[in-house]
Length: 534
Image 1 (cartoon, rainbow, N blue to C red):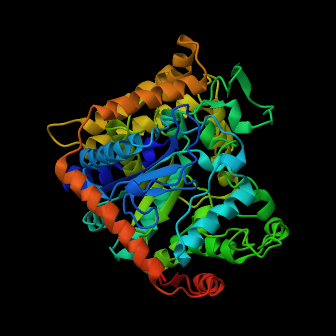
Image 2 (spheres, rainbow, N blue to C red):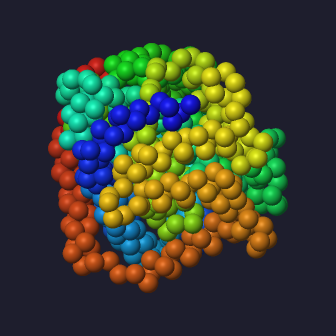
Image 3 (spheres, rainbow, N blue to C red):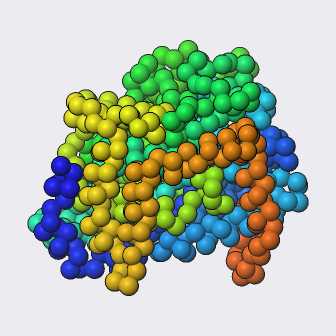
């Protein structure tokens, strides 16, 4: 059924125009989150190292929720090897700096050795209004959802097709190319299909089937099993990070938020409505405490767009302090961000070339596949399928929902992967079969769940009779030592040092400019969607 929706004439037409060359010119970027930890694996309590520059102004090294949560960002680059080389160089640079303060990066998505919420330092960004706003947003997240789930790490895959694809694609499907409007229409269709088939991602790449007991503090989860005295798990779980214990808008039924993906306009409108609409739970929390200090940016359904958790987001590059919805409305979709990847604990970078080649194939498949709007019933199926796969995807009897009927996960998975074969062939160059090889690796995982990262993690834990903590700590230390043996290219090292110095200078310049009243700054931001950096 799935393959029949990929028109053979479309595949032939695209094959004639050299899609492989276009894909090689398409832009790929990676954002990888990792916790800074002490030698025992406990969350670092130190400030973001000044030797890594300004978390507010550095292009490639920043922080996410916590001061201890590094986020390494590659620029959008042509070619997967180049992207991974840049990510590797960032790791080499960061590890060298962390070695000076006896710290390293945690190698898994799920944290360990947590000592309660009070020991999770919220990221700080200085005294400027933009810096204060970034910090306050994170303060609000902590009050709304708790701090612990905010320190779960992930990998984000950013992708945009080379612009020359779009006129050729319009011609192949028999439509007139209308510029950005055409791109937005078909990118949103791709986004809908990424959601429809997105359960594939935790099955194939999920790497969080277990979690430290410290993650739950004094509370014992009733729906998880004990692996050992220090570890909870589920026997067939793929990604507890993507399950209901991970970072989700867990109160969305109460506050009524669901983004609408029918079109870019409806997506923008649904998020803008949520940012402007009061929500009773957050009104009860209050905007300020008894001392007049802000508790959150506002008391609305969403503080800002980023609060809405989604596995995939259409995005546009931001100019200055610009709302993402404003950027999308003014300039359309520039790229698509996939957010459902766990940190691959078996890879020093947290991701590898084969994964990225499969993801490019998957995105192209989702572009070419028919993509009707998502009905309320299908939206429920999409959410349920993601949850079922995350918690139970490796169960041989696992079934998902498809058009109101049950279908075995592996049957649907093989149907999708089979349908991707001609797409991978389109992407392959004449003398290489790298995209097809990456796809076939995932076929093997669909046929044998023991090959998935989640199964491998549990198997290794059983083989060595080790807890999740012991497994994660061993991997983290292994990569720490491997980076110690590698040397960063001198030119790249100089580039990073220059950006580090420049980022500190940019933050200092920002903070020395007279700041307007912070209340007025927030009011201007939410009323206009664009404010200056002062």
